[in-house]
Each structure stands twice: as C-alpha cells, then as structure tokens.
Length: 163
Image (cartoon, rainbow, N blue to C red; front, side, top):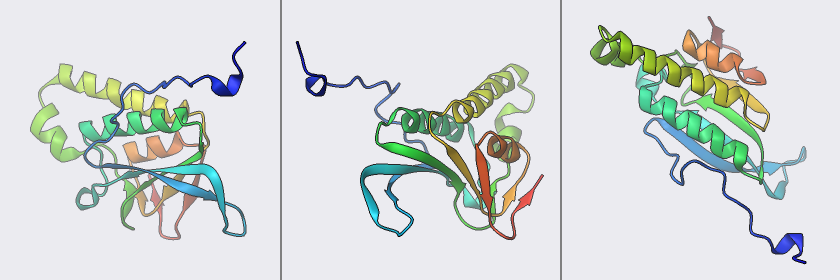
C-alpha cells in the first residue's frame, strides 16, 4: 500500500501560463497578526493594471482574471485572494469603452461572446474556493461594481466611490 505522502498530487489548472496583459498575479506570504510570516502559506493578489483607463478591463484582462482566480482556487498553499487595482484612482470602472467602441460596436454577436466571458469572470470570483477580498482603492463603478460585489467582502479606502 502506498503512503498518502508518497502520491504526487494532480495539477487541476487549465493552463500553466495564466498571465495576461493588464492583470498581475502575485503570491505574497501570509502573515500572523504580529506581522510574522507563516511558512508555506500565501495570499494571492490579483491586480488590474490599466491605470491610464482607470483599470477598466479589456477582453484579454477578463481572461486573465478568470485564469488567475482558477489558479488561486486550485493552489493548495493559498489561503485568501485580494482583488485590487493599480493606483489610488480606481479599483475598476468596468469594461474598456475604447475597446467597446473600436471592436464591439456594431457587432452584436461578438458582444454576446464578450458578455459570456464577463459572466465567466463573475462566476470565477463567486466560485473561488478561497475567501476573496475586494480592495477598493478609488472608484468601483459599472462592471467594476459587479465584479467587486462578487467578492466575499470589501475593504475600501476613505475616498472610494461606488456606483
């Protein structure tokens, strides 16, 4: 009989590379209340990185968020996920209106596919096996409000705005 510790564990991720332009995925050591590091445990930070457009998400960013949440959910050494945006102006202002205007306007079938992907992003947040904290640093507007509300709870800076 094989001992449990001798069995290699199965990788349940859909891909080995879940990076995407405009989305950062970072494992940070978990810490105790006194600030000391807990060996072998991590928090994942998924960060929207599009500050020039108030962290509005593009199609590629939506894919990166989905894969990031799946990877964090599957990681055995991860205890929580922090979902945030770069800078202090906005967590997220929703879908990228520049991309909408340049690509999706006048293409309803393409927009339908985009909305299916957006719904998959919300589902990946709701279905995450770890607690998800929305770190609202500035505006959380439109679709940003929807993805923020999919998180388990929110911690907001003093000047955060919701709508």
